Image (cartoon, rainbow, N blue to C red):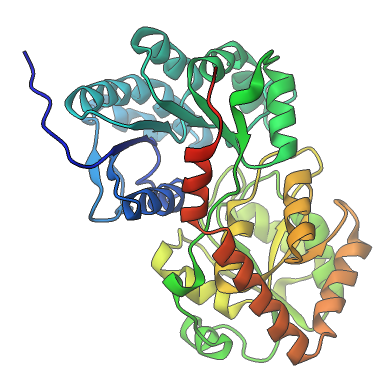
Length: 402
C-alpha cells in the first residue's frame, strides 16, 4: 500500500499542459498565480509538458515522458501540429496528474488549461475533490475563428459541460465571459461559476526602467511615439484597423514583439506593406521571456490590444501592461473594454473604426507630460490592487457547488 507523505503545508496542484511552453500566457499565468499561493503558505506542484520556459524554483514540476512519435508531428502545419499533439499527449499527462495527486494529499487541484474531452473522461473516472478549473475561452456553439478550431470547439461542448458540472469551482475573467459560458453550456445551476480578474505582478516586483533607457537597450527610436503589439500573432486581433490608423499618424512607430500563431510574420509584413507603414515598422520575431517584459513595456507609449468584435476572451497582455504603468488602446471583447474603461487604464476604440483609433493616438500624443505621469502612476496603483495575491484570495473565497 502506497504511503502518502506527511505534509505540514497545504498543497496546490496545478494542471497546465503549456506552463513551460514558449507561446501563449500559460507560463506567466501559472508562475504568477502559483507564486501567490506559495506566498500564502501553499506547496505548489505543476503538472505540465516539458518545455523551454522555467517555472519558479520553489515549484515541484511533474512532466509526462515524451514519445518517439511526437517528432512525426513536425511535418504538419503549425496549428494542426499543436492540436494533434494536444490530443495525443494529454492522456499521458493526465496519467501523470493521477500519479501526482495520489502521492500528495492536496488541498486544491486547479486545472488551468486542458483538452476538453480528455479532461471530461478524467473527471468522470477520478471524481477528484476540491477541483477548480479556469475557462479562458467560453465560445463553443458560437466559435467563429478558424475552421479547425470551430469544429473542435463545437464538438467539445458536451465535454466542457461535463467539466463545468464536475468541479467545485469554475473561474472566468469577466462578466460577459460568465454569461456566455452559462448560456453556451446551458448550465442550470451556475452559482459555482465566478469572475476573477486576470492577475499581473505587483509593480514593485518588476521594477521600473526609464523609457529612454529601455529604448536604448532594445535599439528602438528615441523620439517617436511607440505603439507596442506584444505576444502571439493571432488572426482574431484587429491589426488592419490599427495599422491603417498608424499609417496616418506620422509620429508613431509600430513595434511587434512575439512569436507566430495562426498568423505569421509574413502575414503581418504583407499587411504592413498594404497600408504603407514599412518605414515605421519594427519586428522582434521571437517569444519574449518574462524577464524581458519590463524592457518592452517600458519602451512603449501605448499597448495595442485591438480585437475583432466576435472575440469573447480576455487579453492577458492588456492586463500585464498595468504592472509596468502602460496605457492600453483596446477594442473588441466586452470584458476587455469594460476593464480598461472602469479602471481608467487607457483608450477604448470601436472595432473596424479607423477614426476612433486615430483619435486615441492623437489624444495620447497631445497629452502633456504631467498628465501622462499621473495616468501611469494611476495604472500602477490599479496593478497593486489587482495583483496575483488578490486573485488567489478571490479564488479561495468564491462560492463552490452546493
